[in-house]
Length: 95
Length: 487
Image 1: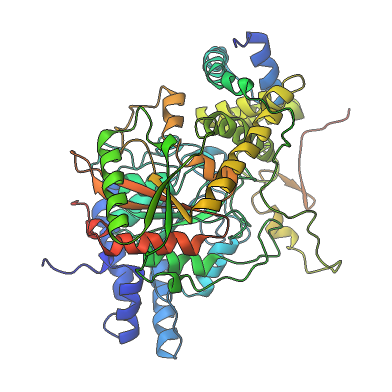
Image 2: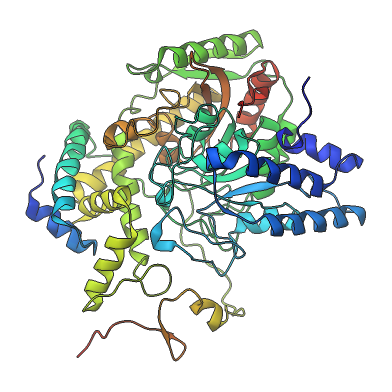
């Protein structure tokens, strides 16, 4: 399965990765080779097989609906590149 | 006998000496730190070192012991893989995108070891976000195999494996998503245990592939693996996937008796491409287990070869979702951009290395509209078949034994340009993560170049006791675990 350059650019867009021309060419070749190697999975008959998302018999674990002291704001913001008025700062999304 | 070196002691040996008052934690910690000073320029196991803080912890441990406290890990120097959050030390996951990040909390496993009085010299190197089999994907440097510095230590927990092998700690924490504890343990000649999914809390383990990730331990022998597992296992309300099951005393499994244990040998593991010396060492180990009274019988795991594509679709798919959090807003690297979207794109372009980008791309593709059914859903269905294989095998046998990795350590640089060849080094370890079961690698020989060979013992879900029992009996009948590299 050969991936087109457009497909690689589309995936990079979905993943929010800015890639150089050289990277696009490299991933186009490498991903094509990897996917080709994986093609034989399609030969397995799996129509009646349920998918496995998790191996555990756990479903929807909940805890008691009780508040606990939260992490304090300064600590939560300590690693942020930009902070303003006690909040994470991001570029404007709306005009 | 040469001069005794404290840093070469196991946890249980050092623990006995500490309890008897023959040695202090400060002496033990100084020995480890001196060893780090002497050899880590060559081995490069540690990303972060905190010698003063380690000595403070050692003094506190000695004081606690003088006040009557005890415990297997009180005053024992342990290394932590740098994918586990530590509030006192930077946590990078081997990535530029987390350079300088100091987490606001400790991972549960770190908190448990801290509460047990352990001493932490520092954090060990890893492939970026634990994606790799050699530490060559670390954004910082490549760790070297203490048995031969031109060879990789394996990965992704290569820093932890090398640190244990070189005496730069007594034992270490690692993480295992597809073999990242067992494969480096095999390549460095130490013991590596990946517990059952749900046995150990993942809270504070930087997420790679959430349905596969599990915290594991790297130790000098099987007894230490039992001790470390006992210290970190158990339910954690902060991890919804940690199981609320009692934690047995794993040392009780170390009986040395394997009479009547049924050991399965998968025919699919003796494949083309398996290094003859690895096959020979594993066959010799099976003969020894038979001599010890185990019943060896063939089993079939027909979907072994399929585990590679299944893993390399599911793990990157989960990773592409998990790594979406690195957005340059809340923590980590931040690059400028003329819009929010371009800020994300530039931050991630600058912060992630080539293998991480490759896996994000692969995972995003496998999840994208039009390809989801053919790749991701297909992989999840075949994952069910892989689980069924093990389920059937464990009806017939107690444990499964085979090689941990098809080859011994490879040369640094040898597989960097060929991702598929690199991925193959995990062919025998991936399927245990897909099935969620437990596995342990222990030394079973050396090849012609004096590089260690590892044997993998696999057990059913929550069958760590069986795995440890078999591994311990083999270990006690051999001398492999007593070998130390010359550095």
